[in-house]
Image (cartoon, rainbow, N blue to C red; front, side, top):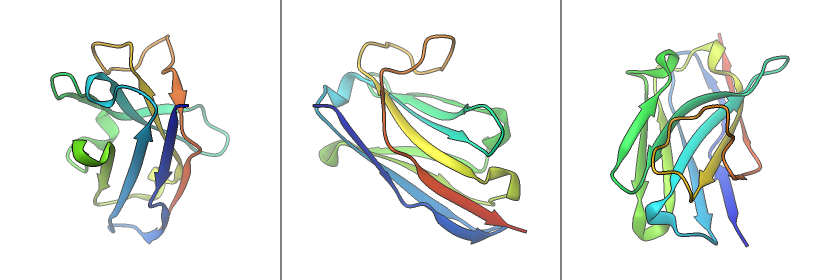
Length: 125
């Protein structure tokens, strides 16, 4: 059974930092694409950052470049999202997703196969 457990969300002031974790199990982790997505109230879900673990390639949304960093601990099958210089517009439910069948990570019309439950990030001004 595929499981993706996202954690680390919370309330932070603008300019602050949070680190989200996504613990994965039930699929071939080291050859999968892992993505972080977010959905704010009243808005569509959007891609934030992703990594293809086969070659380490990453892709960042323009809105988070230079502020967010994705990293991996393969020994723990865990992907992290370090979020710095947070802004109120980063407020959203953040989801991690996995796709063992992609050889690149960038999101597109075809959604990722597996999704975690989401963790709330709230940035106050």
